Image 1 (tube, helix red, strand yellow):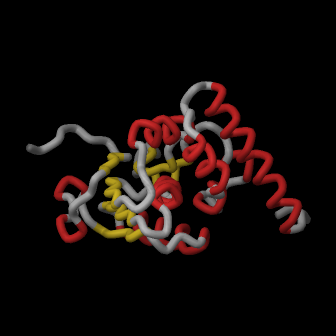
Image 2 (cartoon, rainbow, N blue to C red):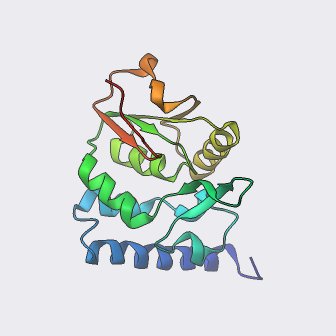
Image 3 (cartoon, rainbow, N blue to C red):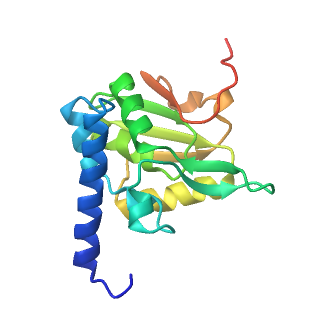
Length: 177
């Protein structure tokens, strides 16, 4: 932490998070108070602990896994895109949500914030290390109403159905009937 105290780092994180959300609001990506509050509340840096605060709160993706060729395989999505997706999804308190692609767990945490204590979020991913990382990040951030499962999102998760809302945060090349 370069000699910073926890309080100084937390204050810097809040300032950077507010600036990021302000940008998403100004761009029209975040329009509703509930989604704005979720994005101002959930600490993105806890889902990208390996990068400096400035990178965690930049309006761009944060790669968390790269292939042999150096190309990103998994990442924390761009915050302004997440805001837009949440606006389109309009998750309500108490709902169950299925997310395809766990990533860092940040999007699942936002969904959990929006569904509230009575809601449920299930996030699926095909990579065991991504599942482990998302689970760890969610625990660190204090989210207990998210289930992280090692599974291909293409086959869904019938055990937890029905899901009034499903969000795909991975590359989807087609949707099966």
